[in-house]
Amino acid sequence: MSAQGSDVILDRMMALHPKIIDLTLDRVWRLLNALGNPQDALPPVIHIAGTNGKGSTQAMLRAGLETAGCRVHAYTSPHLARFHERIRLAGDLITEDALSDVLDECYRANGTDSITYFEITTCAALLAMSRTPADYTLLEVGLGGRLDATNVVAQPALTIITPISIDHEQYLGDTLARIAFEKAGIIKRGVPCIVGPQPDEAMAVIEDVAARHGAPLLAHGQHWHVQAEAGRMVYQDETGLLDLPLPNLPGAHQIENAGAALAALRHLEMGEIAAEAAVSRAVWPARMQRLNSGALARAVPEAELWLDGGHNASAGQALARHLASLPKRPTHLICGMLNTKDISGYLRPLSAEAGNLIAVSIPGEANTLPASVTAEAARAVGLKASCAPDIHAALDQIVAQDPQARILICGSLYLAGHILRENV
Image 1 (tube, rainbow, N blue to C red):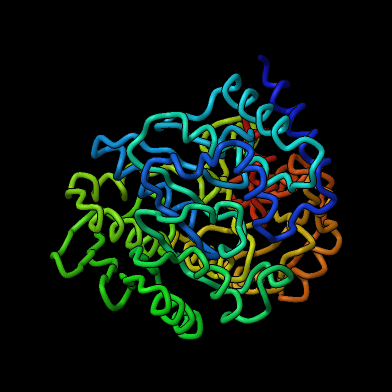
Image 2: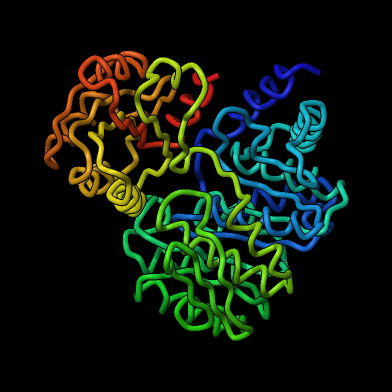
C-alpha cells in the first residue's frame, strides 16, 4: 500500500471527534477492550512524562538499551515529517503497510464512536507493539499523564518524569502544582520513578503522589547527580561514578536529560557501554539540530543554520543558554508559533542572544499565530522584528544583509516538521 493509504485513514480518524484534545480515558479503554487489550501484552514498559525533555530522554534511553543488545519499541508524538516517526517496532520505524493495516483495524473496531485522533492512533501503536517481540517499550506521554491515552499500562517496569514547567495551562491547570499532579499521574503502585530536576512546588506534589502509591523515587539531587566538568559529563549515584562524554544532543539542558536516561539504565542494570551510548549515539531531530545539508542549507551556504522545536518559556531559556555558549556570531531568529503558546515567555530570554527576528506563519496549520502577531510580541520583548511570507523569503532577507549569519528557525514542532519536509 502506498504512503497515501495511511494518510487517508488518518484523515478519516480526524473526523471521529470534534475536539483535537479532550482529556479522558473512557474512549481509550473502550477501544482497547474491543482490540483485546493489547496494552496488557506489551514488553516491559518505561513510561515517560514531563514538560520538557521527554523526547530527548527517550532517545538517549533507546540508544543505550539498543547498544546493550535490547530490541526496543518506542512511541512518541507529535511527528515532524511523517506519522510513521511516532512508532518504532523493535528499533525500526513502522512500515507503511503495517501502519495502514493497524490503523484500519482500529478504525473498524471503533466504528462511528467518538474518539480523538491521538487516542485512536495511540491504540494503534499499542496494538502494533503488542504483536512484535521486543525487550522494552518506551512510551512518551502526549499531554499531561493522568488522563493521557498512553496511561493504560497497569504495571510498567519504570516511570520517568522530566522537568516540569508551565505549559498547556488550558488543559492541565495554571499552577505548577496542578500541572505536576497531572504529570505524576503516570506513577504506579510500587513502580520506581526516575525524577529529573524539578521546581520545589512540582517536586512536593510528585513526592506526595509517590508516597500514596508506595512508589520509590530516584530523584535528581537526592539519589543521582549529573554535571558538566572539564569538558566531560560526570554522573554519580549510590552505585558509583561515571565519567562520560558530553551529550551529542546540543544544549546544557541535555545534561539533565542524559542524567535521567542514565538513572534509568542503571536501575535496569545496564553497563557502562550502554551509558556511553546513551549520551554519544542518541539522535533527536529538531532539538538544536544543525542543518548542514538539504535544500534550505544549500540556499544559505555561508550561514550557520539551526532548527529547534521548543515552544514554551523553559525551552526559550534553554535555547538562550545554548546560544550564549556558542562562539559569538550575529544571530537571527525565524520564528513561527501556535496561538496556544506563551509567546512572550518564550521570546523574552532569546532577546538577549539574537539581533533580530523574522516572523512567519506556520504553513498548513490552522492554529498558527499570524506572523504579524509574532512580530509584535517580539518587539514587545526588545527584538527587532519583521515578517516574511514564507521560510525561503525569510532566509533570503537575512543572508542579503549578513551571508555568514547564525540563523535559528524556532518556535514550534509544527514549523520544524515543515522545515524538515522542505529541507530535502
